[in-house]
Length: 295
Length: 204
Image 1 (cartoon, chains in turn blue, red):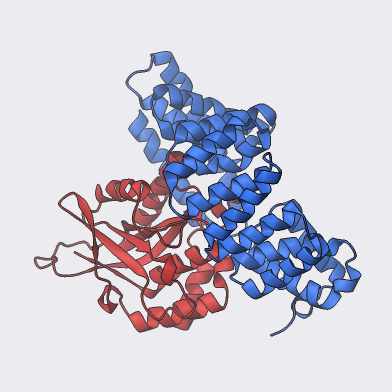
Image 2 (cartoon, helix red, strand yellow):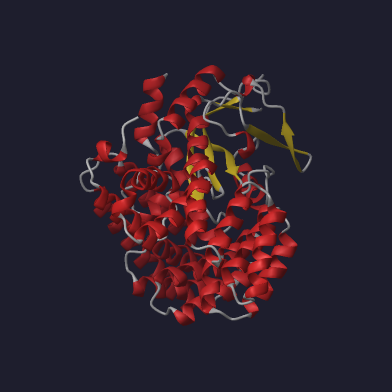
C-alpha cells in the first residue's frame, strides 16, 4: 500500500502541521491520524524534536479508536520511558485498558491519580466514561452531578451532551447555561440551548427557544440550525391556541422572515449544482405547506 | 407486511455507522409508494429501496429531527416514496435495543405508514467482510416492538448486498457519506448521497 506521503504528495513537515491542526481543532478523525501519524513516527521521528511526545499521545488515542493496540502500545511505551511518573501518561495507560475493556484495571490507574491529585479532572472524566460504557447510567449521572458541583467551567463543555443522552434535559440546559455565561459570543451554545428548551416543550420553553435561536443568529447569521430552529419555534408558537393575537402576529412575522432567509440560503448553496435543486424545491414546499397549516 | 431491504438501503446504513464509530447514528428508510392496495398485499413485503442518514452524536433533540422529517417527507412525495422505517445504531457496541428516541420516531412514522419498522444495527457484529446480516428488525405488535428473525429473505438480494457493503467499507466510502447533520453544517452537502448511490449501482 502506498504511503501517505506518496499518495498525497506531502512532505513530513506538512504531515506534522496537519496533525497539529487536528489537535488544535480537537478532530476525531482517528483513521487519518493513524495513517499520517504512524508514517511520521516510523520514518521521521528524529526530525520531530520535542513535538514527538505530543504526537505519540495523539496517535496513541487515535490508535485506540481504530483498534490498533499494537500501535497504541508502542506509543505508550515510548511515553512511559520518557515520562515515568506522569499522571498524564498514567491516564493514557488507563485509556488503553478501557479500550481493551479491562475496566477494573483502568479504574485502578485513575484512582491512583486521584489519590495523588484529587482535583485531576481528566481522571474523573474517565471514570464517568467507564460507567457510561458499562451502561451504568444511574451511577454515571450521580458521579456527573458530583463532578459538576466542583464548578469548574471547563467541565461543562464536555458534559452537556451526556445528560441529553440520558434524556436529562434539565441537566443539559443547566450545563449550557453555565457555558453561555462564560462564552457569551459562542453561537453554538446558544443554538444548542435553544434545541434543548424546544425539546423540553411547553409554550414557555418554546418562547425561550425562539429567543435563543434568534440570539444564535445574531452571533452568526449563517447558522442553519438556528435559522431552522427560529422558523420551527416561531411557527409552533403562532399555531398555539394559547397565545394572544399580537404574539401570534409577531411570531408569524419571525417565521416568515426565517423562511425567506432559509430559501435564500438554499438558493445560494444551489448555485451551479443540479443535484441541490431537489433539496431547494423540497425546502420551499415544506415551508409553504407549514404556512398553510399555520393560517 | 414485513419490510425488505435493498443493497443500497443496507449498505448506506452500515456506511453511516462506520463513519461515526464513536457516536450513535440514525436515519430513515424509504420505500416506493404503491398505488393500488392488492387484495393479498398482506403477504407481500415492503421493499425499502433507500435510506436517508440523519444524525450522529446526540439523537434526542427535537427541532432538527422535525425539520428533517418534514423535509424528507416532502422529498418523498416528489419521488413517489414513503417513509417506511427508521434505523439506529447505538453509541455502545453491546447495546442494540431500540430506545425512547427510536420508538418516538417510529410512532410518528406509523401515523403515515402503518407497518413502519425499526431497524437496529448490531454494532458488535459489524465487520469489513459482512458475512452475515447485522441488523435486527422490530415490528409493532400489540403496542410493543418485537424483534423478528433476520434471514436473507429480509433482503432483496443478500449476496449482492453483502458484496457491495463489504467493498464500500474496504474502500472507505463512508468518508464521503453525507447525513442530515453534515447538510446543516454546509447546505451544499447532499443528503441523497448521489455519489454513493452511483458507486452502489456500479457494483451491482
